[in-house]
Image 1 (cartoon, one colour):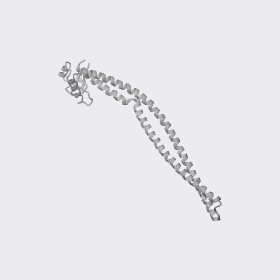
Image 2 (cartoon, rainbow, N blue to C red):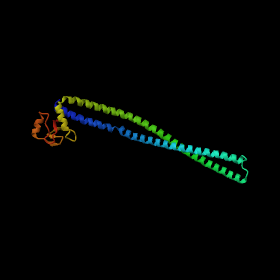
Image 3 (cartoon, helix red, strand yellow):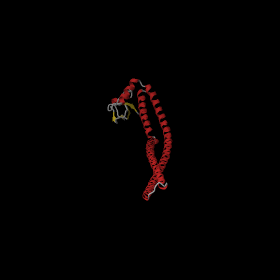
Image 4 (cartoon, rainbow, N blue to C red):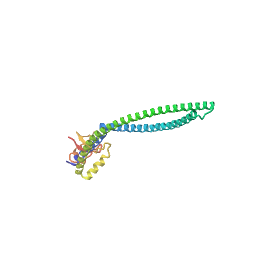
Amino acid sequence: MGIIACLWEIQNLNENSLKIQQQMKSIPEYRELKELKTEIETRQKEVHSLKKELELVKKDIGLEEESLAAIKTKIEKASNELYGGQISSSKELESAEKNLTKLREQFSVVEEKILIIMENADNYEEKIKNMISSLEDRKHCFKDLNSRYKTAKEEIQSNLAEVASRRDKLRAKVPPEELDMYENLCSRFKDGKGIAALQGGICLGCNMSVSFDILKKVKIRHDVKCDNCGRLLIIMK
């Protein structure tokens, strides 16, 4: 295989390598994994936030229970005073009865409040439980999806390694100065292609006809460039 043919094949392999790399992002599971990862992270934050809210609710329950205990102590004290024979006047008796009634009302209010807060806590716990269950399902989906993605990715990487191996073998056949010249030439073009096929007297790099002199030279030399775009030419039959 001549130098120009090796360089042409290297160029084709470079193009093929880019296409294979693009396939990595085109794997069906790739986008699904990104979306699922975002969903899982969002749900984890929601669960964390709900747990924080539940902690506050439980703290409220604790405070109200302390308040309830304090009222209960006051009720016991007021009852002892009322029924312990310590009160002698009717006025004091009436005042003690009113105080005890008020304390019992306060007790009922706080007790009711605790029940409402506890019901709220139960709702939080149920919601957290359901979200964690759903989150675990999504994590299992992610695991299965990731497994399929890795399999597809490994296959693409294997193809990429094969292309790289073939390209390295071809590069070893080209003299370093010729390889440097080709790579410098490639850097001048947006598509990164320094070689163009010549077919029917037309350079397929710029789609322009080349001169007759170029047509003669390209048949016997490997370093002939298109007199329009400056790419190296290779004859395609």
